[in-house]
Image (cartoon, rainbow, N blue to C red; front, side, top):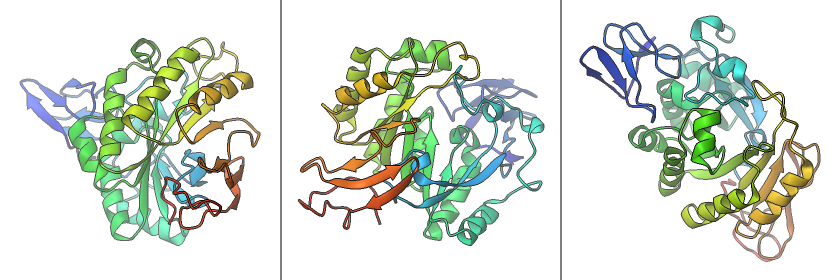
Length: 335
């Protein structure tokens, strides 16, 4: 265990100020995330240096399509989450308790060991992913600080449900982020996620303001968040508040507590992409075993820049982040 950051004692409880749940945690209890515990009126992280999963993934799998394309990322996650998504694809991690999952390979994996492993495997990126990285904030922050000193990039795959102060501190060492924007409806967030929309929108604006490379993913679930008017409103908000960032529409598959809902029809994803392309230059479609919607084109001359098959670029024609045909700058982290 490690003493947590972002909390304060209030009478007989500890007030966790890491995320918008603002949990008031009695002695001996854990917060909503299940991994931050009040022990004798001090808050501790139960997952520091205790990754449940460490793997090497293509950066495109996060998905981050405009961040060191073709590179591998050392990816790690723990257990726990500060959301309770009924459609969670990693629910065996997010809904597990720390004592229920063995640490990968050994009792603990220190930040120093994480960096050493990344260097041994020639990974230029460390991704904090699989479960929500906010809830292993202290571990992530220590790893990211060491990685930055070693010239290794840090990226998060997050739900964006974090308070302003800890997010701004994290922005000092994070280079890229893919944020899951679950829906553009607060009612959806309350009913299917156990959260609120507005704090996620604020996190997106903070990341953009602090110059963290940003991409957004929207998982489209039939009958729940597939209204095209709502999707269009989301796209308008993105371009007005975040500018020209990549947007990924992802296909839903029946999972966890929503097994009764059919997979997203391909035509729904195609229609969403058509709407989004009216506002955004780079719109992708994921979780489909097809190249459709996964390639990067120049927004100025429509030159094919990066061709992808599943999670891997097969060709990359970018030259120093520019289109080789018309020399237009293509937003991203390329070098």
